[in-house]
Length: 433
Ligand SMILES: Cc1ncc(COP(=O)(O)O)c(C=O)c1O
Image 1 (spheres, rainbow, N blue to C red):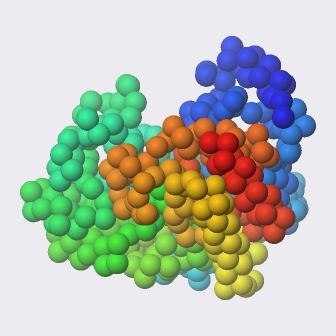
Image 2 (spheres, helix red, strand yellow; image 1 turned 180 degrees about the vertical axis):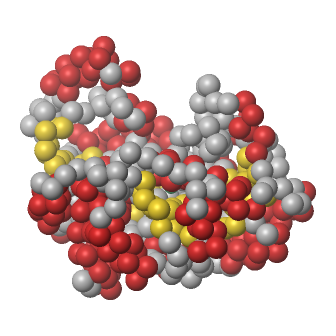
C-alpha cells in the first residue's frame, strides 16, 4: 500500500492549513494524515486508491456508516427550501418530540452545532441555576476544547497531583489563567474521594459533569452503584448531575447511557450520533433548570443552530432508529460484540496483550498487562499508547482504519465481511507487532 498522493497533499497542506489539519487529533494519523475521496457505509477510499474498513467513522457521528442514502435524500429534499432561516420550523419540534420519546430525562431541549459549545452552555447553565462558581470534572474525560473544560484530559502523571487530590492540568497554552480556579478535578469511579471533595468544597459546586461511559479513555464502564452514588451526592449537596452523552447518546441505546445504566441526570448533552454525520448538538434538561435558557437569563446563541440540513439529518436518523429501536440497537451492539470477541481471539492466537474493553457499539483497544482498566491513572500507568499507535499504523497498511486514540465506532452498515477482514488484519498486525 502506498500513500504518495496523501503525502504530497499533506506537504501542500502544511503551507496552507495550520499543521495541515483542521482538528489537532487528525495530525496523529500515521504514516501520514490521509486525504480521502469517498466514504460509503463501512468503507472509506483515499486519494491513492486505497480502500479501508473504517472505524473512525468521523470520530463517532456516522452511526449508520458513511453517506447513508436515506440521510442524503432527506437533507437534499429539505435544503432546496433554504439552509438557515434564523427562525423556527416545525421539523425542529418533531426532532424534540422524538428525543422526548427516546431519552429517560424529560424536558426542553436547545440545539447547537458542536459538542464543545453545548458543553460550554451546560456548565454556564449549572452556574447560573445554582449561583455557585465551581464544577467537578474527572480525569480522562473530554468535554471539548474551551478554556472552561480543557483540563486533565490526559495529563502527565508527574504533573497531575496525588491520586486522591488531583490538580487541574491545562492541555493547551493560552488558556485563561483564571479558568483553572473553578475546575475541581476528581478521579472517576471513586465515590469516597468525590464525597471528600464535596465536603471540602461545601456550597461551591454547581455541577458534576462526566462521560457516563468513559469513551475517551479505554471505554470504561462505571463500577456498579457509582452513578447512583454520584447522583445521591449531587442531591445532598444541591449540585446538578450532568451527563455528557456526546458519544454515548443515540449510540449505546435510544436513550443513551442513562437508559443503559438506569440513572437519569439533571442535564445531558448530545452531539455526534444524533444526525448520522451532520453537525448538531443538543442540551436536554430538567424543565425548571432549562427555564433559565428559555428566558435568556443564561445566554445562548448561534447562527447555525438548528439549520435545515442538520435538523433534516437528525429527523431522518431518529426516525430510522425509532421505527424499531430494539432491533436497531440489538443488531448494532451484537455486531460490535462479535468484533470485540473476534479481536480478543486474534490477540490470543497472536499471544498479544491487546485489551478490548467497551460496550459493542463503541469500544477501545489498548495494550496492557491488566485485564481491565477502571480509571485514567490506570490507563496512564498500565497501557502502552505508543504500541497502540504502531498497531493502528499496521492496521491501516492491512486495510483497516482506526482512530489514533484507541476508540472504535461500529456502524450499522459494517458487514460480516468487514468484521472478518478486520479480525484477520488484527491477527496479522499483532503478529507483526
Ligand atoms: C464526550 C465528548 N464531549 C464533547 C466533545 C466535543 O464535541 P465536538 O468535537 O463536537 O466539539 C467530544 C468530542 O470528541 C466528546 O467525545
